[in-house]
Image 1 (cartoon, rainbow, N blue to C red):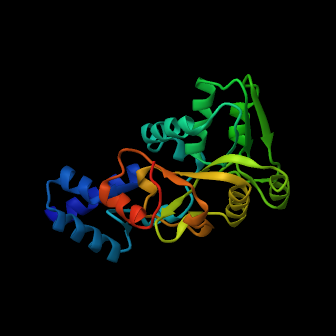
Image 2 (image 1 turned 90 degrees about the vertical axis):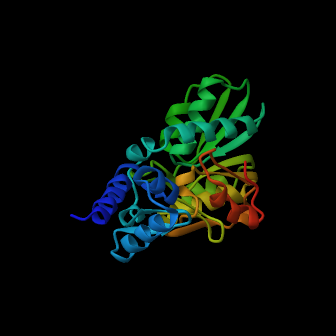
Image 3 (image 1 turned 45 degrees about the vertical axis):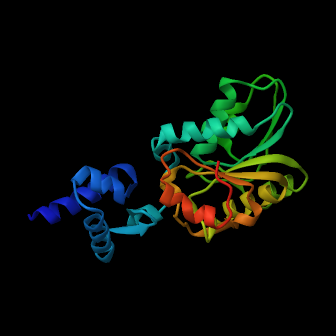
Length: 253
């Protein structure tokens, strides 16, 4: 096997391990130039072994939905950082919305670590409801709806009907894809519709996404950026990854 083939196989091995890779990581790990890293990504995409995104790539298979338990193992430190930022936006007495997803799960756990004296949480996620049930000072509203085993999210007409009766001050929204042009996307149409309804019922909405999701798109549109107050991400998001979002007028936190 040639050195080039071995390096490209190594790139795919890393992708399988961590879900995404940047050109900078390839340069550092394999000791190659930026031009070589990008050429490797182009070739691997032509071979249909990966899909390029801004500044790096994801596995072709990552277009398929990853189970929740596996997502919980991915980028935990980045998600904790994002959860801390989201927590700092919450004020005593707020009514907040939490959609499903692992990053919102980290927000729920951050609330448990330092509860508010008075807080109302509206969620369509069974796992988040279970985490927050019984927290002192916290009023929990679970939307109801049809559960999806991949995400534990409740969605559909029942969830949407409940949300229509509620005014939320701040919603924190997870997404599978966060693209500066297309907006926020996810794998399931019903979930996309219910998440959009929660945005519509909210005075402010913050998209939560670690750096691996930036520049990616999934199947179904949740909403465009005009409906979003800001994007909360982690310090691992490189400047070149954030520039397209800033150019589009998106507030970065």
